[in-house]
Image (tube, rainbow, N blue to C red; front, top):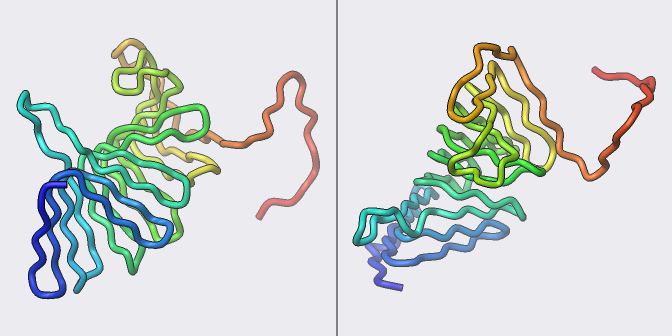
Length: 182
């Protein structure tokens, strides 16, 4: 909405609320830098008059939406690096940390939080995930994690965690079934 600077035929800088569409991928941010030689895009929000960050990058990839402080993404390799991600997975929210996106669509997060609290910016409770693999719409698998209640970490940690996302929920007594798993 503000301005766009194109250098030669391989670089573009967009200022103001900007948007980039590429296939099923959509990126909105206050400032976007495109490098067509390397097929990379860098997006970041900007501070407003009182210092709050506005126009944070919002990355939409085939129906999954991610908000971040800043992000770098390669269109050819479909890999990216995101800081301070905020996304809804199932009935919970995954926030924070440093995140890498793999070409198969999985996200690897370090120092993140998973909560079902509606106030995901300042949750009343959450699992602090030292490291996690997120497969959007499928599950989250975590390494060491610990519960935090009202900002106080509990002294009990779990070595791993598994948070499945499914549209089929069950309650009551679950009858086990037989099957193979490699």
